[in-house]
Length: 217
Image (cartoon, rainbow, N blue to C red; front, side, top):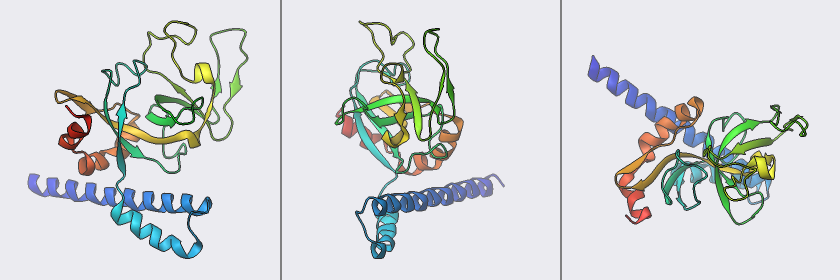
C-alpha cells in the first residue's frame, strides 16, 4: 500500500508539473503576441516550443549585499528562480521572495519580499505620511533584514520605503532555492501558496550539482 501511495504521489506531482509547464507556455506565448513578437499564426508553434524546450526556472547569480539576510545568507551565491511571465496577484503572492527589475536602475535587478499588492492600504509609522491604497497592478516590496532602516543614511534598505510602490510587471520571477556553498543551500521560505505551487517544479528541475557549478564553488 505504501508503494502504491508513493507512486500515486509521484505521478500526481508530475501531472501538476506538466500543468504548470502548459500554463507557462500559454503565458509566455500570450505575452509575446501582445508586444508584437509573434503573429496570430505563430501562437501554436510558440506554445509547442515553450512547452517542450523551455524550463520553468532559471539561475541568477546573487551579489547584492545584506538586504535579504538571513533569508538569503552570504555575500553571493546562485538563486533558482521560477520564471513568471505574467506577474499577477494570482501568480505571485504576498510573502514571496521575488526578483524584480530595479525601479531606479533599469539594467539592475533586486531581490525583495512581496509585502502588499493592489488594494492594500499602506499606513506609515510616520504620522506625517498619509495612508494610501495601492493602485491596480502596484505592489510593495521590502528587504528582509530588520537591522536595516529606510531612514538610516549609513545602513539604508533599498525597498518600497525609499522608492515607493512598483508595478507588478517589474517582477520577473519567484526565488525558490538558494545555494551559497556546497554546505549552505536550501529552499527559500515563501508564502504557503507559492511553496505549494513550486513544490513539483523543485522536484523536477532542482539540480544542486549544476547550481554548484554555476556558483563555481
